[in-house]
Length: 188
Image (cartoon, rainbow, N blue to C red; front, side):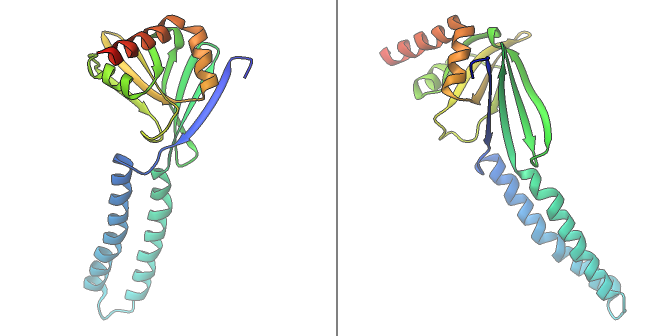
């Protein structure tokens, strides 16, 4: 956009930690009714309360699935407004939390996350990584190195090439450092 505001939302793909979280949820969804059925049978065997108890177990299972499964859907929204980059994590399509907010000029290096950039970052001492990407297969992954107090940190996020052009205009020296680092890695 011409006014210096860009918004980009990506949905985290089911791989890695998110896939493990979903698998644990499914295991829980299967284990809960089995454990509840054993408990109901032990408590109410031979009683007329066994039927309402099973109905209650089914109701609790439905509520458990309804309220927990939607939290396995995670989206990341990167917003560039003027000279600020704000990354928000959206869970269950409605719960929003600002995960990171930075001044674009605070980046000491920023660029497209390529295999060369990955090799370069392996040699940089980083104290913390902030990862807000849909998948490692994405073509629009960018990285930025910044300081957080005494710590040197990296953020990985997705945005459009137009938004990154805006970032380059605001912090040309950081984008230039990333290009020089990649050229040095290619020559090595």
